[in-house]
Length: 294
Image (cartoon, rainbow, N blue to C red; front, top):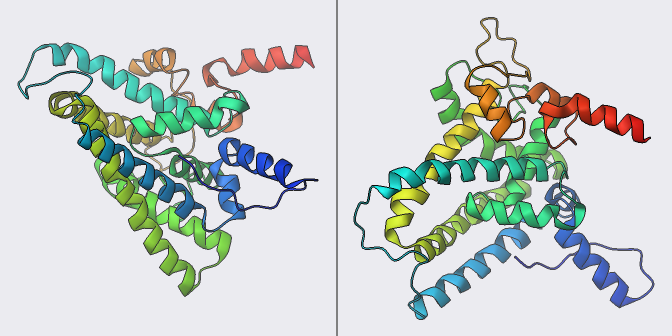
């Protein structure tokens, strides 16, 4: 993904400014860039769209074989491979989650987020911008991108499928004003963002082949994103009988295992307290180590 930074930098020479701009573009968080430039998404998704269309054209013109030759026939090994693929999908979302808070080294944090975003289809910028809004307005029914609803299926349908995009638009209005011009720009941005998914899916289809794409990749995407939705739901106290929705820690039953294979994923109250800790399960240990080192 390539796009040209359009920001001003305090620099003595044009070359220094160019280098500073490129470093900023490829390392700074998307939310930071978006605050500075309302056309950020057009550069970001436009760059992805152009790159993915070029990749698809190259794959089609060269009739390149998929990574795993396929004949579109069912094989039992897919059942054995699926748990591994699903685990990888969820793990990549855990990594993106940490990238949103800069928990990888700065030089590679954005790179990891972008690469993981390509695999889980979302692309990193929307993941990060929406997640920052979630932390800012956690459990606010009007502003949280995925505020809790008592019924998980309703939450999955209404909040995860529709409210996330609605709040992405509201983020633009909060930053740049709720004007007819900005609403028109957001409608175009939404079409561009969703359109970019199509060549991305085609690229994975061509790379993996129809069999692996249909029997492994697509089911892992569907179930993996259902897991993301359920994680957001259950860790905000969705099972509360009184509607006391807030980030909570869960470390019992199957969630105990989830915390140990996905870096403390369900210790969500800890995460909201200290988002700059990679594994919230080890928050006390990390804080003690930091205090000793200071």
